[in-house]
Image (tube, rainbow, N blue to C red; front, side, top):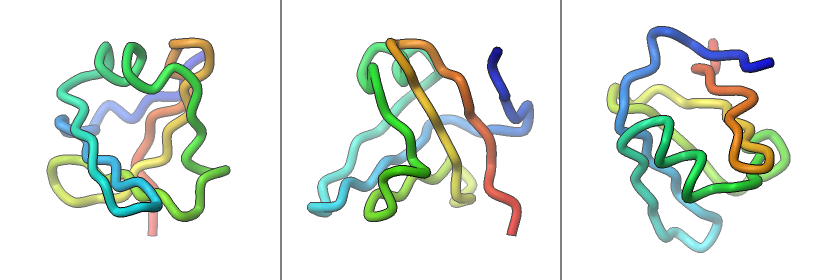
Length: 72
C-alpha cells in the first residue's frame, strides 16, 4: 500500500550525505533510479519538492511505498 501526498510538486531534489544532488522528474524516476531507499533511515540525506518543502520517501524493490511532505 502506498502513502502518497497529492500535493507533491515534482521535480524532487535529493541531496546525498556527500553533498551530491540527484533530481527526480516524476514518480517513475524515483522507482527506476532509487530502487531501495528510505529517507527516514538516511538522516544525512535531504529530499525536497519543487516548492522547497521537505519530503519523506520510501522506495522498496522499485515500488514507492511512501511519498509525502513532512509537516512542520
